[in-house]
Length: 128
Image (cartoon, rainbow, N blue to C red; front, side, top):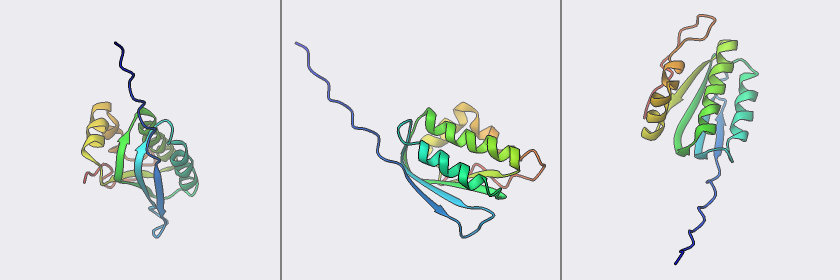
């Protein structure tokens, strides 16, 4: 007898908030599931924020529940673009699972590098 498997629920929508109270270091709050089906809005917001060339771009992952490789690619994209314009990428409230993913993939090492213009990094990969 074959038992039908239940279909897994779709990804929880990602929630994105931006605190621009410090224009030199906007804070992007990310919650929910950052995955293939939900990452496009965050990537678009990152591009908008980096267009202003802030000294730092801060991600607050306090509400993050899940991250897949596409979500990870948004972080790497932000780092790569930040390197080109001298913007440091900082992470706050990093959940344990994300900390593990960042370490296993080597992204933690990328985030610890200062931007190419020689500006010092200011504690880019902090955990909760």
